[in-house]
Length: 465
Image (cartoon, rainbow, N blue to C red; front, top):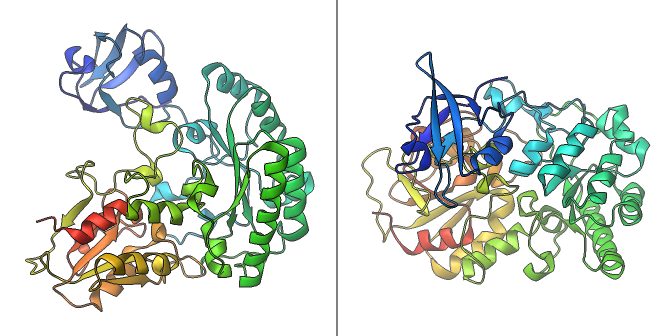
């Protein structure tokens, strides 16, 4: 078990008043050794408690006293202080198995930890879930959780997960729902494996066995050029259309049976099938926008000012856990120096002649081009929208979140100087792309903007200088 390390202390906070400093290793809180940031939060919610820390090899204690509901005021370096529960499935469709060698080590970690599901909205298959886990989820109110279903047929699910426990682990889904835990599900649809009749059976299985689910997202299989599974392939346009038709048919049945649509097809299916996207209102609270469900309509509404302009990324509970570090998809986009209250951060690589009057180029993934282009044209006719082809991953990988520095560099090197280049922050973590290329290494100055419609519109209308 590793010790949580304090990485930041807010000025004037209870932690600061107690004398805690960045670099302190937390040994115990109120006499307990918290296993994760969830237990840490439960202890930190007390009005007063003792904390034991190690500083420079010396152990010392401090008394923390809070006034009212003020936050503790520290940030720790990890969400889990014991070991991450890794995935013991061997899914043929797992994207991590399709990553090339040489990327950051953290990208190859396959977690199947219900705590990360609660904190960050990560999906878990429940194949490593236990009675003790259920007791903790229920007693501590760890809700909502996010569960990968893939198929309700036990044999199909076990085959897809390549894990015999896949045939029985959905019993934990039933137990969670029985105990009032809110659960969102997903089905990664693989052509010829769990689409067609199998997907139809899964819809019926959900209605019969799990009607209390909050939502279910049907998302397409992502296949990179590094894929070695011969049975895994992208959907054809007709197969994408078939998924849309099936989902929309079952939405009507779910509305009649449980009062809401329940199941949704991701935006990629509609775009690939050439079908118009449903209206934003049909997605309810757009809970699965991170899965690409309703993300396009939400972006349009933000751009047009008919929806909140805030960054829509956060999921799970991490944002409201005092001290929980952002992780993965929610990690700081530019690292030190980024003011998260601003919409963009200019990254000047050399003296730039771009100005408010300069023409603008918006960089994005190939899927989003036809969505963003008419929006941009309405407010900046001189602007262009560039769909960056993902040659690094290849295959059908076309979303902005998987853009790499090498591909963005290729496009920028072929583009003229003197323009303003806008880059969505969703493709970055700490100012670095998935392939390790830093923003500072790009061949043109760029402005990294928050990945929401309102931020894009403001960036088009104003200059950060």
